[in-house]
Picture (spheres, rainbow over the protein chains, first blue to last red):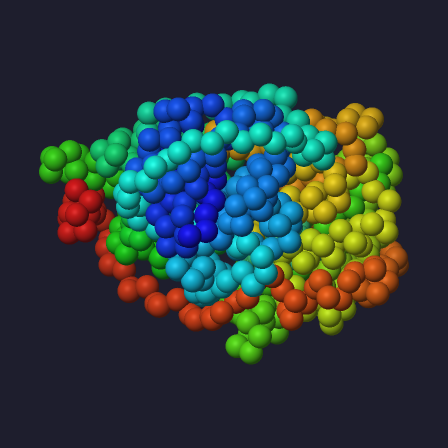
Length: 314
Length: 259
Ligand SMILES: Cc1cc2nc3c(=O)[nH]c(=O)nc-3n(C[C@H](O)[C@H](O)[C@H](O)COP(=O)(O)OP(=O)(O)OC[C@H]3O[C@@H](n4cnc5c(N)ncnc54)[C@H](O)[C@@H]3O)c2cc1C
Ligand SMILES: Cc1cc2nc3c(=O)[nH]c(=O)nc-3n(C[C@H](O)[C@H](O)[C@H](O)COP(=O)(O)OP(=O)(O)OC[C@H]3O[C@@H](n4cnc5c(N)ncnc54)[C@H](O)[C@@H]3O)c2cc1C
C-alpha cells in the first residue's frame, strides 16, 4: 500500500486532535506516514502510532524558522521519494498555504477545506456559506488535501510508528522569509478553539471586556471560548479567538453564540457546527436562521441562568 | 516602490451564489460581481505603502470581461493603473492554474511587492499567496496584519494559531493581508472621475505568455464531481425569554446529551 503523508500539528510534543482525525482518514487511502517538524517527536510518536501511523518522519526544528516553504519542500520530497498516494494537512490558514506550495512543487492539484474524504480520494466540501455541498477530486499527480478539524471522527488503529529522521538541505528559496520572533498570546487552560467539541462565543452584545459571562458558560460545558470580530476589534478578547472568515474556522458538535448577529463573515467560520444555539435580543438577527435552538432575550440574564442550570444538572 | 495589488472579482456574498449545472464553475450570471472584500484591504495597504515610499500601484486581475467593474473600483480608490488578464481559455482554471497564470502576468510587470488578500469569499482556498511565492521564487510574507518596509527590507506581523510571528525578508516579496491591517478608504468623487481615464492594459494568454495547456477547465488539476444544495437545516426552535430562557436551553442541551 502506498504511503499517505499526514503533516502533524503539535504543540510542544503534544499531538493535536485533528492529526488523529487525519490519520484516520489517511487509512482509507493507504498507509499513514506522519510527518513531524520540530522538537517533541519522542513524546508525540506514541499517539501517532496509536492512530495508525506506520512511520513517523522527523525533520529538524530549523524548518520552522522560515515561513511555509520548508514544510512544502519536505512534503514534496517525501511524497516523491515514497510515491505517496496523497498528502493530508489540517485546513488551518498556515497549512492551507503549505498544501498550495506542496502541490505546486509536485505539479499536482490541491483541495482545501474538505469535510470528508472517501477511499477513492473524493472530498466533500460545504461552500457558499453552507448552502451548497460539492464533491471534488484531484485529477493530476499526488492529491494534496486540507481537511477541516472535527470532520472525520478519530479512530484508534495501532501501527508501528517507526521513526525515520529526514535529512534535507533546504533550498535558498525556502529560506526567503525568516521568522525572527514568535509571540505567543495568552491561552489559558481551556480547550483549543478549532479542536473543541463545544465552543461558546461572545459578540458585541457582551457589551464590555468583561467576558466572564461567556467564560463561565464555556467552563460549565468544558468548552472553548470564541469571539466575533466586533468583540475582538473592541479589544474585549484576543485576536486568536476570532471565529469567522478571517479568524478560525470551527466545526464543533455544539456552537453557542451569545450576542452575535450572525454576519456572513462570522457564519463562514462556524456554519458547519453540528448544533447551534443562539441568544440574541433582536428577533431579526440572522444568527437565528442557523440556530437549532434560539432564545430571544438578554444574554446577561439567559447565559448565567444556563450556566447555573448546567451546574445543577451535573 | 512598485506595488502590484491582486484583485479578484467575486459574487456578492449578500446574493444567492451558485455553481453552473453544466460545467460546475461559478455561475457569474446568478449574482453581482464585487471586489473580494479582503482585496480592498490589500489595495489600501498598497496605497499606504505608496504614500510612504513613493512609486506606483498597479492592479492585476484575472477574470472575465465583467471584472472591469472591480478594476474601476480599485482604480477609484487611488491605484494608478491596471492589468486585466482575460481570455476564454482561462475559464474554469483552478487555484494553482490561476497562480501560474498570475505569475506569468507578474513576469511582465516590474514589481517590488505583490499584495493580495489572504482568502477570497467564494473559493476560499487561501493558497494564492503561497502558490504565487512558489512560482515567482520570492519570499512569502502572508497573513499579515502589519507591514513595514525599510529600503529593501520588509518586515511583517504574521497571524498564527498562537498569536503572531515577526517575519523578515528582502524585496521583492509577496504579502497577503488580513482585515486587521487597515481600514479601506472610500473612493472620492474626484478619484472616481479620474479612474475612468486611468490606463487598463488588457492581456490575452498569448500576450502574457501563458501556456494554454496549463490553464482552463480541460486541464484543471482538480475536478468538481458533483454539486447539490445542502439539505435544508430543520427549522430551529426559537423562544422568547420569559424568565427561563436559560433553563430552556439547558433542556435542549440535555435532550442532545451535552449535559
Ligand atoms: C473582510 C472582513 C472580514 C471579516 N471577518 C470576520 C470574522 O472572521 N469574524 C467575525 O465575527 N466577523 C468578521 N467580520 C465582521 C462582520 O461583518 C461583523 O461585523 C461581525 O461579525 C459583527 O460582530 P457581532 O455579531 O458581535 O456584532 P453585531 O453585528 O453588532 O451584533 C451584535 C448582536 O448582539 C445583539 N445584542 C446586543 N446586546 C445584547 C444583549 N444584551 N443580549 C443579547 N443580544 C444582544 C444584537 O442584537 C446584535 O444582533 C469581517 C468583516 C469584513 C469586512
Ligand atoms: C466554490 C469554489 C471552490 C473552489 N475550490 C477549489 C479548490 O479546492 N481547489 C482549487 O484548486 N480550486 C478551487 N476553486 C477554483 C478557484 O476559485 C480559482 O482558481 C481562483 O482563481 C483562486 O482561488 P481562490 O479564490 O480560492 O484564492 P485565494 O487564495 O482564496 O485568494 C486569495 C487572494 O488571491 C487573489 N486572487 C485570487 N484569484 C485571483 C484572480 N483570478 N485574479 C486576481 N487576484 C486573484 C486575491 O487577492 C485574493 O484575495 C474553487 C472555486 C470555487 C468557486
